[in-house]
Length: 117
Image (cartoon, rainbow, N blue to C red; front, side, top):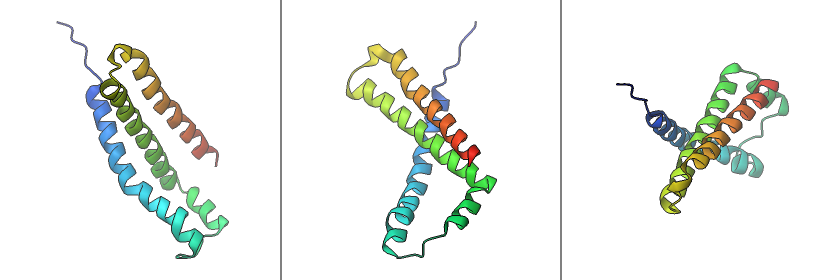
């Protein structure tokens, strides 16, 4: 018997890890770059310092992971919002292609941007 495996467990794993990473890291980055640096709670890092930090391969890997996992979290959540909230299960194939395809394209763009810095 030839049973085809479903990619659903992988998609749920990307969803949960993306939610966790986004919940832990995005608020910190928003606080630093959206509140603390602009109003002077912390001294603003120089352009040279941020450039040096961004050239560290570990920093690039972490930023790529944040971007890619957050995009897959969004894709899974949006897919099920369309399925269950708007009752659009009859359009399952285009929804899957657009949601996860968008996450893949966004991840490729993030990788390209991080590699060219």
